[in-house]
Length: 410
Image 1 (cartoon, rainbow, N blue to C red):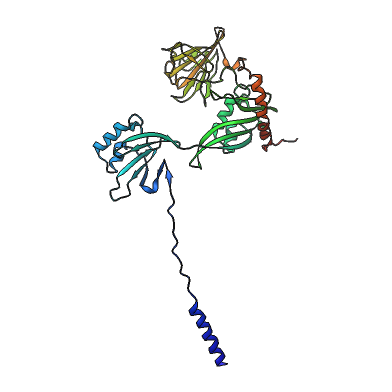
Image 2: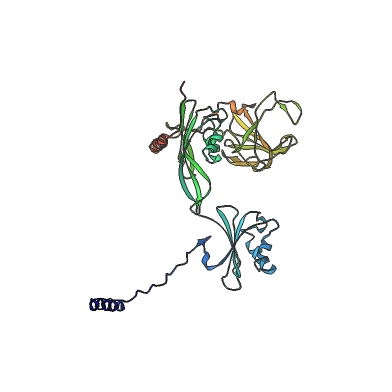
């Protein structure tokens, strides 16, 4: 028995000694390549920060060991592209420096917004260039039921408030969004903009929409009517243009602060005085647009109107825009519907920033919101046929969006 045990033990030891132990090789971890702003950041020492109160372009570079003569040369070379005085508090910037012990600054990158950025070379070959990040468009679907207002419904659904503004623009002459009813509902197909794959930079635009108001359906589907100009308009399911010859408002994303009223008491004067305009309240500097195509007949200033512009659209209609901060057009200039003509201000007799929009029909001032204004030029027969082919699958996609409309029963 002992001999058998010794033989087995010897056999095991011989096998063990004959085995070659596997040597574990060290794991090679490759450095992740990080590319941003057109640079491989791994090649630099990267400093990221935001502009703080008291900072200037010069002081930021001084903190990175660049000195006045160099900074002056950089500013002179960059000024045609980048006004260094316009860096704003809270905006991010990056400095890419050499990886050696000197850490010499090579590149300054300033981001005025999430999409655009400015690159300033700090080396011997000084230059500056404005660039933009690649924007990715992502399509979304959304729906909602009105319980009190469109904006509140959007907020409940955690949707961008810009969707409300876009819908009100699209349906401006079809639906009165100040008189929506409980149970009205909508569906939208829209796209949003993203940079760096996941950072949202806002709404792109609505591509199609369905709005049910007082039980009546209203479709709005975009269609490019002029590829050369990139003109996109919205049509219903029958090919009827939703646009009118006039925009409903001269400023986007605004509210009516005072309507046309011949018996209104004007706070500025402290007495009853006819108000022959419609006031659209908006922050100072908001762009004002021509509500229809026409020729500028007046671009001037008076004590009561402040800076103002008047446009003749045809033999029947003219419009006027009062209390501008700045006028952007000259007499005799032709403008298209939607063109910039100035900015909102509070010049002349006014108590707050707004544009007073006045509307003439056959030489008489009237309330534009109560006029049955002419429709936009109808789509051609050829384009209509193309539109109906384009519209059909889009309408089916809208119809397929599941709506959470519920009906109360007695």
